[in-house]
Image (cartoon, rainbow, N blue to C red; front, side, top):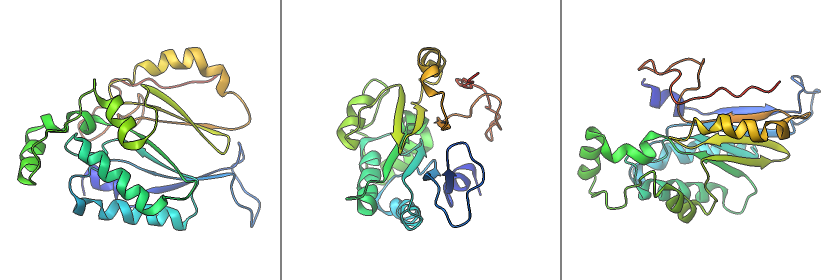
Length: 217
């Protein structure tokens, strides 16, 4: 099993109740969210596992689903459209929040030789490829959500922070300006696609490039 299959194989559920680590017996947490990454959508057929995972999260009554990048394998608009269509097929009409960010494949997949070959083999010519300069406009068109290099979303009073691909170093400046606002009785959650400095590196040993570790004192 490779990194991509491992990260996406089952997803994960996270529970939060302020800063408490133990919930009273029989009570529900203040927040429940699912976390996945690297879904690498290519064609209609590639959406099956993503849909299955979303249905699992729906059955678990999550408040949000976090997806930390590489939504589209080829780095094309169609990949994002597949993700939005699949999401709507499960969560349309609910209040469950989609909390997604971009990864390298979302803006560069069409540049990778094996991805380009696969893309053309699947009958796609890459006319809708995404570039870092066009990502904002495409994201807002497809997902109907405002895009920014560093984004803050709120779910049931909890803060989720994310950095878009190629903007990871901007988080330090964001924290310097807004870090005080995050202090309180609730934890905040930070995610990005690239491995964060000081964490376990990926299979190529890239554990601390383009990444800043947020610290609150």
